[in-house]
Amino acid sequence: MKTLYELLAESAALHRHLCPRQVLGVQMARLAAQLLSLDLPQRDKRLLTIVETDGCFTSGLSVATNCWVGRRTLRIEDYGKVAATFVDTRTERAIRIAPSPTARERASAFAPDATNRWEAMLIGYQRMTPTDIFVWQPVILMTPVKAIISRAGHRALCVRCGEEILNEREVVIGDATFCRHCAYGGYYLLCDEGVDQGLPVAQWALQAAD
Image 1 (cartoon, rainbow, N blue to C red):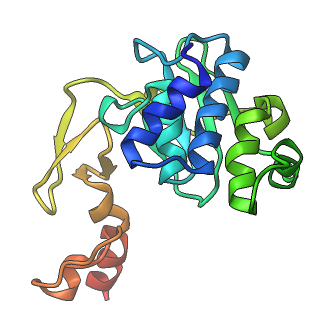
Image 2 (image 1 turned 180 degrees about the vertical axis):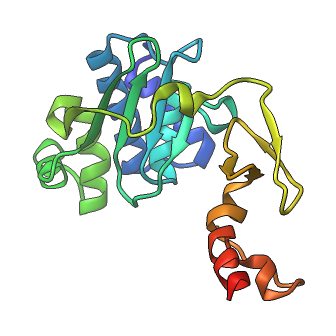
């Protein structure tokens, strides 16, 4: 693995500054490498990482693991938490890591020269070992690794919106194939069509029956 400071320099280059959460991301990845006995940053796609927030933390983690959304080795489940689950896709062993509840306060002891709390975290997290910062535990994924990764080249068409669906993310209801937005609803509602067109299939079917 690259040194802590080499990884921090790469992360800082993405943001033009270095912040405490980038340090947490890099340090967390270093702990994951130790716990899973993996050589990180990876040169293949063996490690799958599921992060629970976006932002600077994720950049630090990505630099240190070489897991990226574009390589399909990084997933975001936005719980608003500085935490991540690291999955060895060969063994399917998964470990979730999060900061210790006392990490922020303990950082001050490692940075007595800091002028404020933010600086204490920035300096302290670099001087602490990963085991001083984090807590971790093995977990079982609710969705199997093979289903998350899916099959390359698989495509389907939604019968309702007509859009293409990749990576086996389609939903089959009866004999029909839908995208998840049309089946369950999603983060947007079409505003240039009738209201019915924006309803999930299940709710639309109920209204049509009435």
